[in-house]
Each structure stands twice: as structure tokens, then as C-alpha cells.
Amino acid sequence: MAKKITERSNDYSQWYLDVVREAQLASHSPVRGCMVIKPNGYALWENMQRQLDDMFKETGHQNAYFPLFIPKSFLSKEAQHVEGFAKECAVVTHSRLINTEDGIAVDPSSKLEEELIVRPTSETIIWDTYRDWIQSYRDLPILINQWANVVRWEMRTRLFLRTMEFLWQEGHTAHATEQEAREEAYRMLEVYRSFAEDYMAMPVETGVKTESERFAGAVDTYCIEAMMQDGKALQAGTSHFLGQNFAKAFDVRFQDSDGKEKLVWATSWGVSTRLIGGMIMTHSDDNGLVLPPRLAPTQVVIVPIWRNDDEKASVSEYGNTLFQSLKEAGIRVRFDDRDQYKPGWKFAQHEVEGTPLRIAIGPRDVANNKVELARRDTLNKELVDREGLEQRIPEILETIQSDLFKAAAERTRRQTHTASDYNEFKNLLESEGGYILAHWDRTAETEEQIKNETKATIRCLPLKPEKNPGKCMISGKESPYPVLFARSY
RNA sequence: CGGGGCGUAGCGCAGCCCGGUAGCGCAUCUGCUUUGGGAGCAGAGGGUCGCAGGUUCAAAUCCUGUCGCCCCGACCA
Image (cartoon, rainbow, N blue to C red; front, side):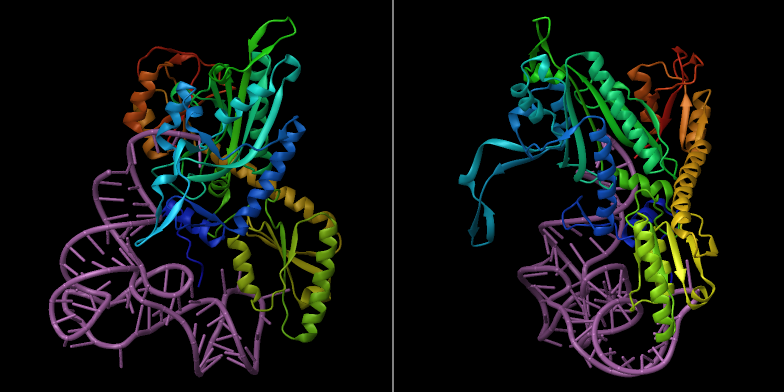
């Protein structure tokens, strides 16, 4: 009778798909690698958007919107950038369809003079535009964000974690000095860290990427990395210090206060619907989705129970009053009084959909002035007084929020290991998975070798490293501090 | 791009080997009884069996081709 969710221990990948389906977050579309984000999933994204957007505004950014299509010539202006994205671009070549005997076909006569790229990211078109916006240091900084969809022609896709089209935000900023741009990149990384930890309840490691993992066209890529329950790491957000690479490529100069003409300094930063995948894999269990209260579309669901019309009348009134009162207290609450479903069905459904807190009320509770509270994260049930719920429930929600974070942080700690030599490294990777801190000589060759031999990559060089110099586990050369390895999504 | 799987009712699937009236569960609709962890009974509606050829008296089933999606590996957020 229970919903068919594969157990995590049995098949983690299938479990993930089952949760996404049963929680009604998204479904596969007829188009390979693309998904339909269903209302439950989109509501979650909207809550993330709202919070992030506030945080961007708080740090001085404004939203704008740039085109979906990018002239092919733009993309080739920055050498590293085009190299990084060339292999995964959707290209628009024609503008018209015609009817033929076999149905519909591309009209050969509608071939575009200049082909258009569906944006994989917007640096190029934005920097082409910024050139016109910037003349003087007085025009700087430019602090812009855009909410958009992007397309990357991926070989292998997974709902939310990697889809060919995904939703994201991309911030693009222009600055007069290197220091200012670097500070911006750090600032936004911190915004991401705080969003991940304080709202998603997902503990993250902050760090800087190695050259091979760096964003194409960036000087430095900073990231937040999160550890999933199956021991694989997820890159959850990135913030790039772009140096003057795009300013050079698009000839974006400004006249500084000293009268000299200079190249502009840049950053870009983004998080995507991938965060939803990360959140699922951070908190959910074999019963389905578990959501942090701060982002849950519905924080509290009230399920009424009755056997006859009299009970229905009294329970409905009791429930409705509670509903109104919680709503006025600013809680995202739903009174699920649908008559076509029985209470047991609703319990199970809200559980699989991850609603953080359930309130059940029946005739007994009405008589005793009580309600039954059930926490989604712990599955604990408790009979409590109706009195004072308006104050108590926000507290419980915050407790759930912080308990989720603590549990995930504790799990991540357990999944973080230290390897003193390569053998131990490989053994840990096979037996435990998770993060492995190990010494590395900072050469691309060693990094490559480890990746080829173990499939583990350097997730990042932690921004706040342990201060214990050592020797690279491969080459034996000096390493100022251990770096973070893991297999990843 | 390799390897595997799948396409049959809204969803999940069986049927295919061995050709012979297209089925099951869930969902939907009607009625009655139910409601503190996914209700029961009775009845009803719903299908170009992915597509195109072929074999045959007869094809979901056999043959050939083709399209698509999913999963696992090589690239990436």
C-alpha cells in the first residue's frame, strides 16, 4: 500500500528518482534531458528565488534581462570561454518551417546569416552590452543579476542535478579595481554559503577550484560544495573572479579618476535548480521528501478527522479557526479538508511531499482542546495544547530547521576523512566515500592522475584550511595544506 | 558515444517465447457504507498496443526497419 520509494541503501539513484516523482516535484519531458517542473517543485524554486533575490538586493544588485540568443561570433571572443562551452551549445540555424508532403520541415531558404547560440551562460552578450554602458569610473560598479533559463547540451542528465535546460540566476558585475571585484566574488560566495546553510539547511564547504575545475574564462572560481547522503559531493554554487578576461575580449574600458584608460574588472556568480536536487539528497529519507521549513511551500498542514456531520462541523470550525490564526501568525499553513481523501491517505501524502509539520485534529482533540503534532524530519508525534500554538509552531519550525542542519552537518562530518597516503586514500574512497582530505602538490598532472585512477576530483582548496603542511600523497612534494577530494555529481 | 532496459488506458505494469475477442493495479465517474496512518462493496467509462513495412486466414505477439525515452559508464553546474 505504501508508495513505491526504493530504499536508499538498495539503489540510491532510483530512490532519488522515486522521491522526485512521488513528491510531485518534476517529471521527465518528451524532450531528452529536459524536465517539467511541477507546481510542487516550482513553488520550492520560487521560495529559493525570493530569498536569494532579497539577498542580492540587500547586497546592492539589480535585476535585468538579456536575450536568450547569442550571436555565434560573441561566444568566440574569449578563447578559454568558447573552448569550455563549445561542445555543449544548442545552435539556431533557421527561422522558418514549411509544410511538405511528409509533414513539416525546416525551410532551407530561411537559413540565418549569423547563427545564434542558445545561451549556455550570458557573459558574452552581457559584456558586449556593458561596453556601451561604461565610459567612466563613475559608471562603476555595475551590479546586475538576471533570472533566466540556460541550455547546455549534456550527454548525461538527471532531474534537477543536470538537465539540458535549467533555471538559474547569473550575476554579472563590473568594477574599477581588482580588489573590488575580488571582494564581490567573495561576498557572493558568502551569500551562497549563508543561503545554503541558513535556508536550505545544507552544510557546505567553501573553497577555490583548481585550474581544471575552473569556470571557462575565470581567473578564480570559488564554490560551495555539499556532501550528499551517498557520499558524493555536489557543486552547489559558484562565484567567479573573471579578472579582465572579458573586458579584454569585449574591449570594455573606462577612464579612471587619474585620467587614464583602464580595463574593467569582472565577476559572475550563479546557482541553479540543481539546488533542489541538492536539498533532496541532503535531507530526504526512505519515506520521501524532507524539506527545511524556511523553504517549504507549505510549512504546516492541518488534517481534520471526522466520522459524521456533527463531528465534521465541530472539527471544521476548530480547524478553520486554527488555520486562520496560524496564517495571521505568518505561517505558510494549509487546511487540507478535502473530503475525497481519508486522513490516513493525507498523512502519507504530506509525508512523501515533505511538509515539515502536520497537525491532526479530531473530535477528541476538539473536546480536550488539544492537537496532534507530527514532525516530518523525526516522524515523532506529540499531543499538545491548542493554546499558544501561534507562538509554539514557529518555534518548532525553527527547531526543525536547525535540527535538519545539525543532522546534515553531523553526517557530513562523519563522511569527511583524512588520508595520509594514496593507498589509504583509495581504500577510504571505496569503503566510505565522502570527502577525503589529502595532501596534493598543486600540479595538474597529479590531479589528473588521481582523477583517472580513482574518479575522485579535487572539489576545492578550502578557504579556511587546516594549517598542517605535508607531502603530496602521489609525488611526495610539498603541500601547504590538505585539499578536499571526493567523487561528485 | 559504448553497454543495458523500456515504449500496451491518465500513472505503474502483465500479456510477447508458444499468433486467435487487449488485461491487471492505482487513478477517474455513479451509488451506498466509511474517516485517529494510503477504506470497503457494487457498477461504469477510458486503448490507432511508439511508428512504418513484411509474413499470415489472423499480429501487441513472428520478421525487417525506424523513432523516442530512461538507466549505467566516458564530458560538465
